[in-house]
Image (cartoon, rainbow, N blue to C red; front, side, top):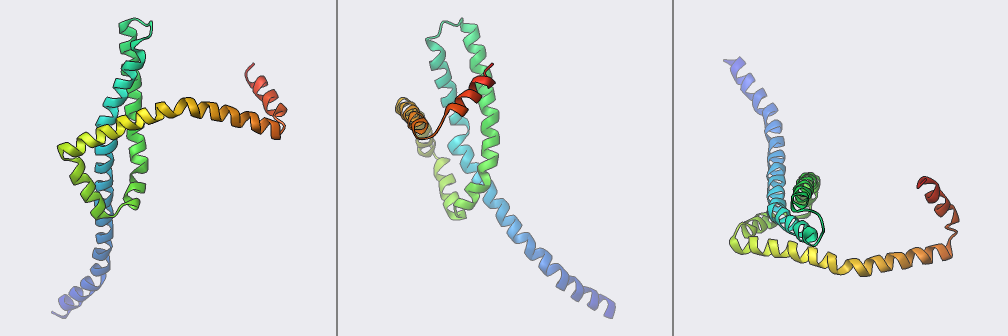
Length: 167
């Protein structure tokens, strides 16, 4: 009988810390799951739809035959889908660390509603439009900055190296 009592005490003492360690791991896993769901709702399927529409629109005025445009659209969309999946996996930990569990639960609950899905899609569309609006100005500013850099610093070595690598 003493053996069983001793065994029970040893088990309780040693199992307590082990069981306590599972709780943070389970909580962390829950946080990661919520972060993954949040990313899927805000960056997943709707992002792919918007990107596909943008690609189709971009090729709409091209002189490529329809079957080539369709092939390119399929390939780019598939490639983007793979990259998006990798990116979501890479930022999931950061999202889990940036938001509290309560915030993630609230965000997921909202984005799972019809209004939340609508807002997520519109945010993606607006982000694309914002990037398109910024691009001409950004490219001009980057070119101007490059000129200023070369006025201040010697770019001859850089341009010589670029010319050699282009051969």
